[in-house]
Image (cartoon, rainbow, N blue to C red; front, side, top):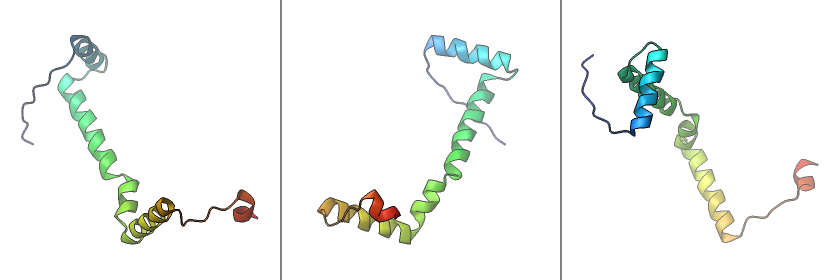
Length: 84
């Protein structure tokens, strides 16, 4: 895989910590940032919320419920009414 150069500006104390952490983990600063970015990417790709919100029926139901709450037409129930 072709690699590209990235220049970052960070606080010097943070950079010292990152370098020390990389050394204790026997890796490079570059690899730390790569792993961090990949973890972000994977968590976003595997985000179940995104899948749920992509469902058109769920989205329509959610929007309808939000509109009913805003308009005041939603009737609230007590705990006993719902669970008994």
